Length: 182
Figure 1 (cartoon, rainbow, N blue to C red):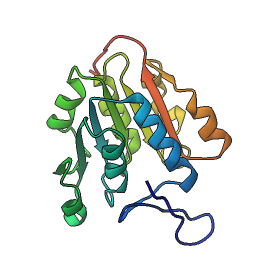
Figure 2 (cartoon, rainbow, N blue to C red):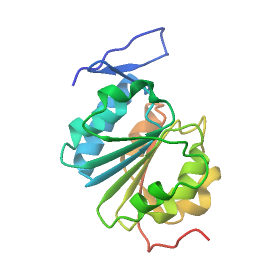
Figure 3 (tube, rainbow, N blue to C red):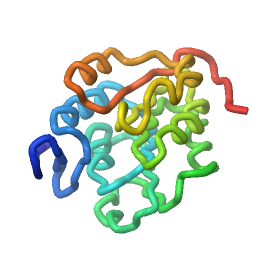
């Protein structure tokens, strides 16, 4: 895995192969480690962007079934090892709901344009032990935005590292029974 800083100071974009990962450069290495340790059987990524995170997820979990959702078809040619869905995910999406209801061990990674909606709408469908990852914590989403849902989840220990280093990713594991959003 090759990760490089490009652009201006404090404006980080990371490269994984030929794809840009729009995360802080220091956090990408930790994200890769977390995903590899979680070893999910099913990964649902909301917000494909350039596809860099998608390919990183694939490299860390090549045996997982990966579904990524975005409404920008410009970057799909390099995503052949995963299931790319050119769909608007704002508003209820039956496919995402079905995937979140799947019985396999899952990672739901929210990095689209409306994290509050994504987390609050799809997080309720995850099972005990499943993990939700959120990018842009502190800028596009905060604990108060999803406090009802977070009562069902525990923060992963790595969140302390992200917070200490001022990185904008957070991970939470479902700890209590499935209570579907009504």
